[in-house]
Length: 246
Image (cartoon, rainbow, N blue to C red; front, side):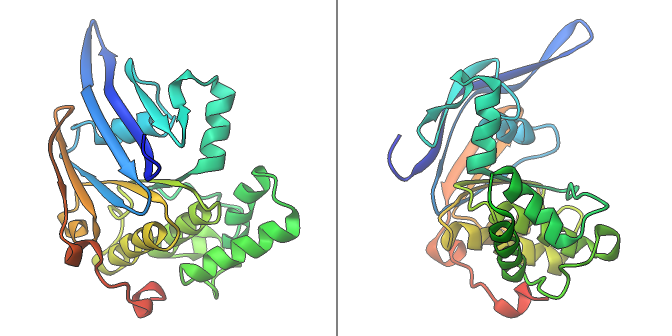
C-alpha cells in the first residue's frame, strides 16, 4: 500500500443466506481509495455497492478477502479494535441522517468528539467550527425536527468532518434531498477530500454527482464493470461559498 493510499482491498467476497440458498453480493472485488480523492461507486439497486463500503469500513465482515486500511489489516483485528479504528479514522454519512431527536445540532457533533476523548471545551469548539464550515452557524441550537432535510444532512456531514477522518464513507447522501441541497452536500464531500485530505468513498445512483468525482467506479451484480478517473475539469468543479451557506 503506497503512502497516498488510504485503503486497498483484495478479493472481497460476501454472501447472504436466503432460505436454503446463498446470494453472492460481492464477487472477488478489488478496490482502493486515495487520500484527497472523491471516489463515486455507482450501480443499480442490489448491485453490491452498499455492501462494498460496509466491508471496506469495518461494518460488515467479508466471507473472504482482505482490507488494508490506514496501515492496518482491518479484518484481522479483534471486534473492539475494529470499533476503535472506525471511531479514530472513519466518518460516516447515510441517507437517513442518523441524528438523535433530543439533541441540537451542536450536541449532535459534540457527542462523537466526546467519545473520542476530547475535553468538553475542545469538543464544543471543534463542533462549532464544523457546523460553521457547513454553513449552519445560525442553526446550532436547533433540533432535527426544526431542520430541513438539507440542514440535517449538513449536520451529519459536520459530525463526520469534526473528527478529521482519513476515510469518509457516504451511502446515498443525496437521495433524500432536492437538487440544490444535493449539490451542496456533494461539494462539502469534495471539500473534505481537497481541503482535509480525506479519502471520500461515496455510494450513489445519482449521475449528477459524477461532475464532482475524481474517480467513478461502476458495479453491477457484485462485480466492478468500469473504473475510470475523471478529467481535471470535472474533478475540480468549483466550490461556490454562496451555495455552501444556502
